[in-house]
Length: 493
Image 1: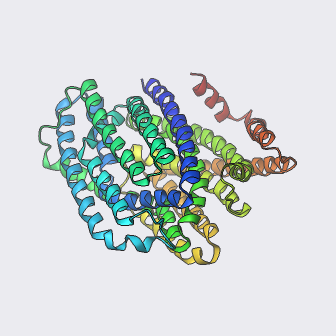
Image 2: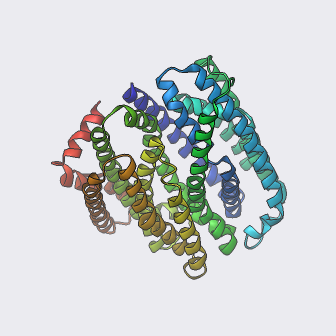
């Protein structure tokens, strides 16, 4: 059943992700050519500000999903209903906290932008629109989404988003191309988010009619959940600082145009990250179930196989970024970063995916209390390095800060926590050796692919080389590896 759910989730997840890459790509292109790069920068800036405000969520969603795993497995409807009632209450409180915090932060918004804001834009109005949409998203049945995720029905969420996104993108194209109205562009996005929440709630009620927000949990359970939420806050803080403070720093120190160029590169990379995230999202609930029902040896074997798959995929994608970014951007927008910054984007992707794999196991096992200080340290180091290097090295310094803080502090610390709480300490040395080996192979594959691609200036030929060459090299290196054999069997099934 776990494999069936994972496959179904991945299938519809891939369909949604392909759709969410292709259509927004053309929408982003329209925004650049019809309205200007500053609007792309504005889009990224407000996304980052709202992610910071969403710290108030404290990881309630993750805590809810984890808390529902066991009662779902035991078919304990009464407890699921009580959990749902608790989280509905929490989300209402969170929406209020975000609203009040956002209003208090209003006077500081202009300081987050260096240079001129587009003349037609009132930054306060734009900020309040985004803030209102965020608050409303918490008040409109946000807890229903977690029920579907915990029961491994991400495919249902994907189908709903395919429908609402089609509605959203169609109207946004009209707002940009025909009306050139950025306010309308934002309002359509916010309305679409609310519509998604409402439809998700209706469908969740239809699939699980017995799961109503009613009942009361005992004090011990509530205390345990509250502790888990407190622990998740640090993870949320670390994630927001590492992934979104970069945008705010670039906007404040370098301006909206530079942020827009940076975000064009990040847009492509995050699209690919989204594809890999489908694997994690589809497997997280199954991993959580497996950690409860299977032996440590079996779970460690699964981790090794997933690590092999992720390192292969990440190494291949990194080589594509390094070889194809510049020629693609020259065709698309004509605004380029330096080759050194492109190289760092490739490294960033690989480090991010390895870290995300380990985080998936951390979330599935629920060891947030043990891991509570790690995200704080990673985010603090990353932010300090950002502020120290952005004036000297610009985007190069921002990217390097994120890579170093994640690789040297985040991954090392997370590995220690996982092998102390989830696996056996004795397994760590062998796992690290394999991870280093996979990374070394990926570096060599990227170097060889880049050298071969440098011989031609034809973009189509470069794409063909990047599809074929890295995978041939990986195959030659891994064809006799046990993990390669296991991976073939999993993909075959």
